[in-house]
Amino acid sequence: MKAINRRQAFALGGGFVMLTLVPMAAGAEVSNDAAKWIEKFTGGKQPAKGKISLDLPEIAENGNTVPLSINIESPMTAESYVKDVLIIADGNPNAGVATLSFTPLSGKAEASIRIRLATTQNVVAVAKMSDGSLFTEQKTVKVTIGGCGG
Amino acid sequence: MADKPRIKLPKEAAKGEVIQIKTLVSHLMESGQRKDAQGKPIPRKIINKFACEFNGKPVFSCALEPAISANPYIQFDARIDEAGTFKFAWTDDDGSVITAEEKIALKA
Image (cartoon, rainbow over all chains, first blue to last red; front, side, top):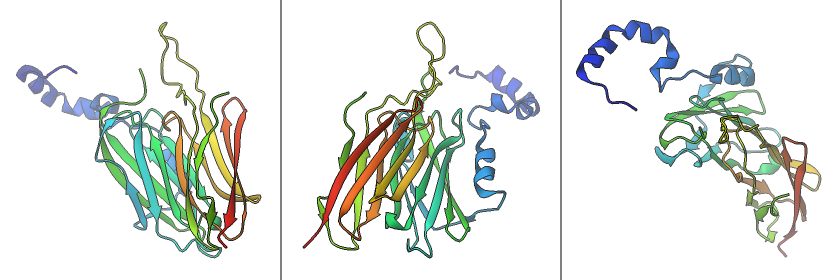
């Protein structure tokens, strides 16, 4: 990445309106199909905050393998359990990361995987309970070296 | 195909106990984003599905996307109500399936 000198900084300030019109140029705030993934999963319903604890490193040195652990509060009985959990990364070329499906036999709604992150971005988890209620949680991960080849 | 998947779980568990299962399978998980030396994109080839069953009943499964790291490591839990056999299956984009089995006994 090139350092910005003073003159360019002024030019950037003037071109700010232009930049906001062209989201790709803004860099970190890349929009991918994350919203579509969430909408497909929730069916348009708004998930509530809470119940999920999402464990990710604050800074990932290597975006190729970022450990992710998720734990959702639930009795995990036949009457009440966590059904599906969608995990997405809003700054990757493709937003989808994984969809975890639990059953009452899982005992605990807990899982760990390792994921790839292309750049500094938010990782979002949305959980669907057996009664249809939805919960969400998100974490920002700073990535030093991206994990999508190139 | 690649090496045998590695699976770690206790040999026996008390009735009703929740155990932790760790799995790791060797796979490149080619994301489809990379380019080869000639600049041509390398086609996507990943494990797109993992499933675990216990005595024929589903325990845990997940759909995986290219954003899963190479050599996918998956850790999850299972409640043991009876002795039996875990079956694990990893499905590749090309349709091949890597399978494994592990037995667990009840503590006397």
